[in-house]
Image 1: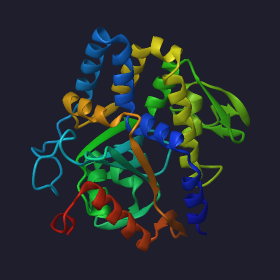
Image 2: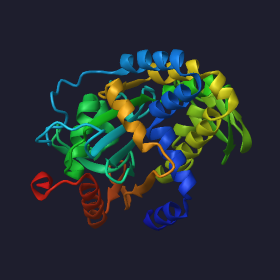
Image 3: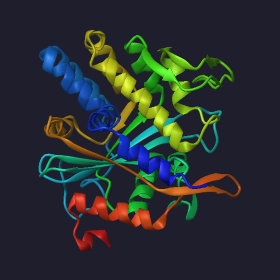
Length: 333
């Protein structure tokens, strides 16, 4: 069954304001917290942010970033890409969970000249080639097989382009962030019965309708897979992320900026240095142009459910991302 028509129409209906919200809260969570706090509290919060994000830095063992790059790049002077990985460490879900399944994957390209961003959402069940296994399976399994390194290699192979940076956020960050905000207001689409973060079945019970959710409830709503499809699941996560942003920019959130910094920092790993993070601040402005992209495809059932990518549309997305990064023909081969 095709999911492309609904997906395409939904993307077109998104307002510019909502597209900005989605990017800033999920893709630039560290930056929006950092620079939002710095603009108000300056000194002490800036130092706190620096300590938190320096603690989240991990050396990926590469001197120049992606092996697909000939030269070293930086966000201040070059077009770059970031892979954002939301990881579910719950042991009660499918697959090899030693490293956690990647429940959310977003690939962003940044064009330094026109300060534009293209943000591509990659469905977790996309049927792709996993280089380390020399086989095809769901892209979510790449992280379970080989951590962030395998996720990057899989995405680079799929789109034939370099991934310069990554930000890995545990889904448990939902809990800490929402608790730091004293809850979020969400319109729950339907009643759910779901396990909690400790995989206790039926621990979370929610009725349909607008209500305040605590951290455990927000996480359960974000990752449940029993009531709709992968695309609608993505919509739910985006709705929750927008609710988080609404609280982040509220007076209550600003009063808890230190708690927010710790919530993000405790659940994040990145190969971006603090200085590189700051270089992205030039993108956060009223002139920022953000375009959200989605992969078209169809449902496929074999031994399990998969989302089969439409090859023609995949090639179109590749070309669009390559052009946005300014890759020449040699880089794309």
